[in-house]
Length: 234
Image (cartoon, rainbow, N blue to C red; front, side):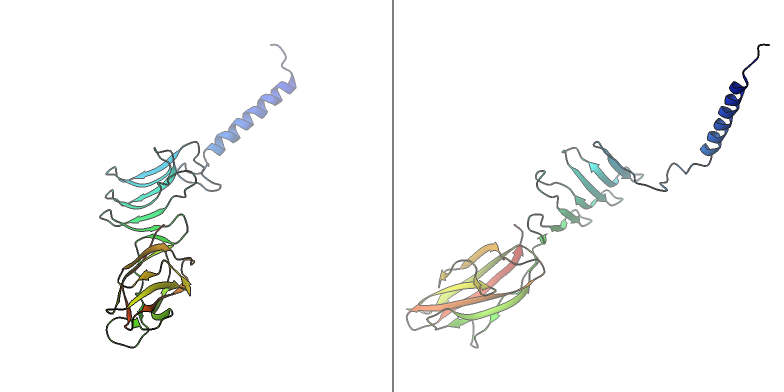
């Protein structure tokens, strides 16, 4: 029998030892359905989906067919509960939308300026600042406050609709102020005030909404009666 170099036998025994160690370690590795340490990363257009036994999707996060990355949360009956999806383009953040069990959207954030986009939250109509019957009114020839209210603002825009009037033979103007700054046009008494625009206030801040009127001719009164006031999205 040919002589085998002693160092070669040592190397074989060392390899056998390493194989035994690897075999032993393979038996004590963590379960394949658990992550003990570190992060799980899904990239390159991958998607994580969770489905109920009925086939309805409960969770979807990752890449969607329309070319965006987003999130979907559903109920076990297949109805949508929440989405963070459907932005207009890469520069448009995706809105968060909440849905009731009937599929109606009940909440969405405003991705352009912050705050709430939906639902439209009603604001408190201005109340009379002038002690007198019927509508708020004035006979002053300079703009005078006849109604005001204080509101908590949660949306970037506001719509204000108001009726105006003047006594026979009298003319005048009516305008709206937000925090003492004119908001929208001054309308001729007898025409409706209907204006939608940015409020210029941060979400959650308090603002004063005031109605002012003045008489420009005649001897009677100028009137204004708010009818509708609510916040809305961009």
